[in-house]
Length: 308
Image 1 (cartoon, rainbow, N blue to C red):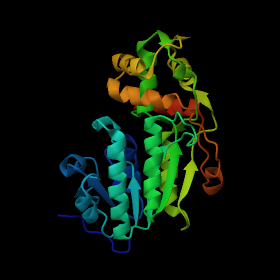
Image 2 (image 1 turned 120 degrees about the vertical axis):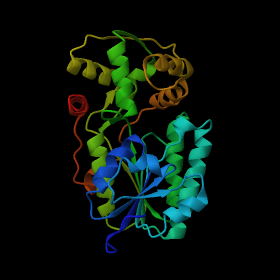
Image 3 (image 1 turned 60 degrees about the vertical axis):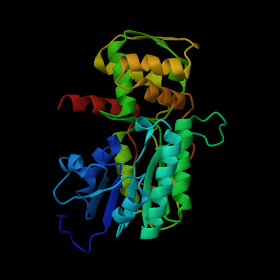
Image 4 (image 1 turned 180 degrees about the vertical axis):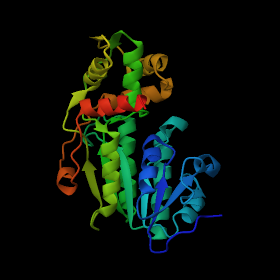
């Protein structure tokens, strides 16, 4: 039986609620004056993670009919889907999923789609497949005709995020690191709390054209810098020795030895790390009152979660 709802409350659909950002966004949406509906391939699994007042609908972004049912009556839809970890051809599957979702949202009369993608320069001919796919998904959603708010972020720092756990695993396990060149690529990470704040605030934006907002902290750093800061806060002595020889493929295998990620996922992530991911357009600071915390505070908060 579906939970009863206040007919005056707008229906908000969350696609990707079992991912890292989605699991943290769900309880925040449950506190809003909305009726939350979560899309799930296996509803029973998600039911244990949400309040009884949250509606769970069975559906799959690769199954268009299920999306038509799920998006019926929806005002705002969050699209936090990324198929990299479960697909042999994630670019193709991400493209198909986005087209399915965009089409269903348009048919259902959804007012707004809110999407979290990735930073990176579209004009870079060497943009990684991972980042290129993130941008393509945003473009597909915008072309649906549904107003789309796309946030582009770099590494998300928070306990449990892929980026932070990569830094944690490398630093905790390797006193001396033979480091590939991607550890010196510039990046502008964002704390998970700030990313969530942007996503929530997007629901209140005045209606208008589709928009892209680049978000990140005030700190432009490197993965090597994050490793050094993590080590400093943990009281660890670590040495980073840069070498130019590790290819993305070898880096992926290397990451698989020291992190929970598979070598395939590691390879895709490393391919993305070769590209600078910094904020070049600062209009998010004008559109939202959010002032993201710095990298040091973000790591401090992530480590604080370990203590309770």
